[in-house]
Image 1 (cartoon, rainbow, N blue to C red):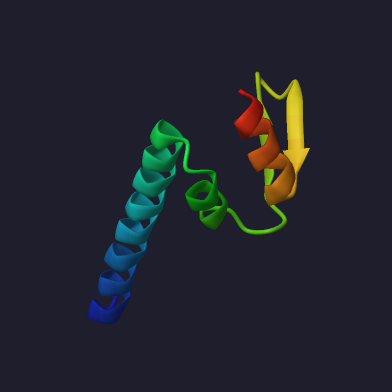
Image 2 (image 1 turned 45 degrees about the vertical axis):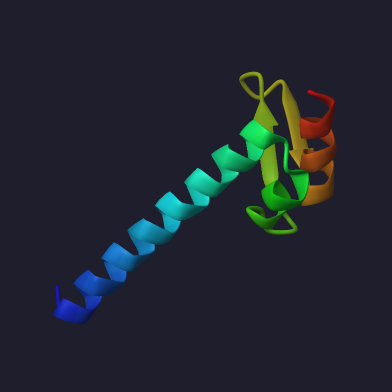
Length: 67
């Protein structure tokens, strides 16, 4: 692995950590605009061991608002 690849890997890992922290922080304070920034438009999310599944960021956010 080259030095550039190693640096890119570390930057990617840090970006994932930042995104996860932002998502959790936004959940804690119920910042739904911030949460929607964590998702791509065609996100698919499931809850309750897959019993509830939602497609699209708008549908996921609407579910989270109701919880």
